[in-house]
Length: 313
Image 1 (cartoon, rainbow, N blue to C red):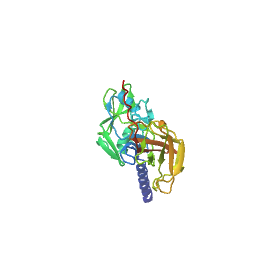
Image 2: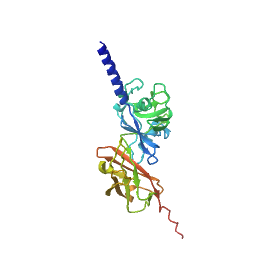
Image 3: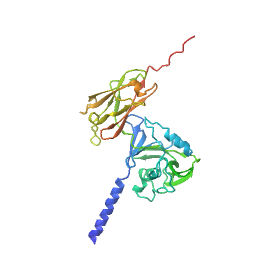
Image 4: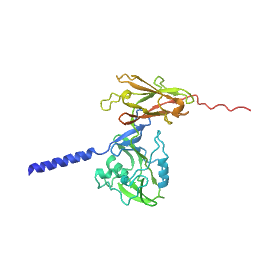
């Protein structure tokens, strides 16, 4: 009997370890400062969704917050939405009379409620905890978490579910109430990579009116925890640069950071990038051959942008 008892305890311990390991980690995405930690977004690696790190870019009724989220364009990503509190019921059209209560549900069941999962598993909240204000999760700063956040999930016509971050409860309300909207999108916006725009130009000076090309280098990384060899891993057909998504017109490889791996030099036509006078940074996105998204940002300066003098009559 002792052996059976010990086996049962061992199974319980293993089950708890497995449950803990399933909890999501938030990964910082889209830093404002190249190579910095001032992330604009955070990727949940269990739910496979990306949150904006600013949880409140404005209050409004449900229709207003839906329109706001769908109109967002962050570095070329324009498929933002409000979070779902019943993924199984559907995102924009689902209606349900009940949603998962993450305070008592299993971690697996709670995955159906994106806002509940953020509170209980990302933030580590418990029933009754106040998780409003700024919260640091896995080294990622989430700002402006308000008490009430709308979801896309409907309870009935003109009534939608919302989540309460000052106690961890689900609730529902008529759509005319003014609550916060927290934007999220399905999938990852890409792990950060280091890029150099115009590698031979320290100030990265660009003439947006130039009808010519520009080189952008994707740098390799020999970090043993996350090695990256862009010359062999990047699927060049997926790479886009600038707000207009310029495509690669030429490729070469050169080790400019002298780490023994080739850095990938990609050339783009300036008019195709969408870079405009006054822009202070530009971003590149793409995927590796195994389907992993990545993004890189570097600072730029624009010139030849003075307005022409008014003609005299």
